[in-house]
Image 1 (cartoon, rainbow, N blue to C red):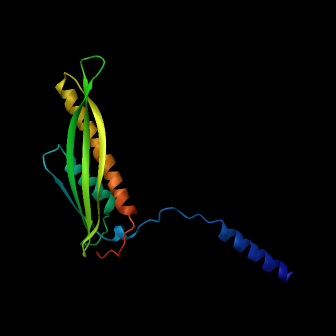
Image 2 (cartoon, one colour):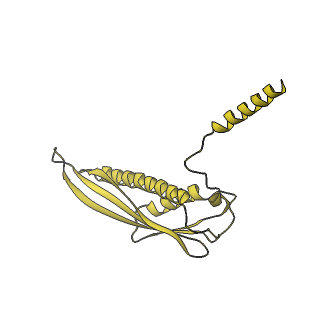
Image 3 (tube, rainbow, N blue to C red):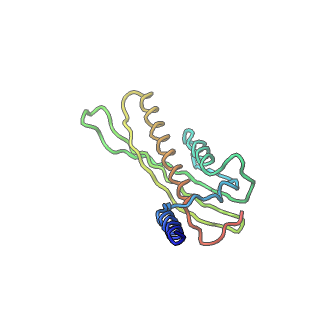
Length: 166
């Protein structure tokens, strides 16, 4: 009976330990402890894109209980517009809106990582001025939201070569 209980205990123990789930990405609790200062630079006045990008990144990277630190994310926005051509109805044409975001992430010792994130969208241009403004703003908002999500995921999932010193 004693051997049976030991065998039962060991078999249950090995079954429970062998059926574990290991996630591909570990949650990075380091960034939730420290506040990341976010600086957004742009050459021109692009509607409200710089403020939107800063607010979305601030929401993703910082929490309300963050301690102050020397972590700094510097982001530069460049916007490009180009014509795509005339549509079949000959009254409208399409424009392509492209955002290039160049980022650098620093800590107390220096540069941790840098890179570039690019995204593109297109919108219709018609004879109606109000519709043109609304479609351009809508394309800009969607691009900024997509770029900010990509950038925050890149920063949070990054495996740095050296230890981060806030």
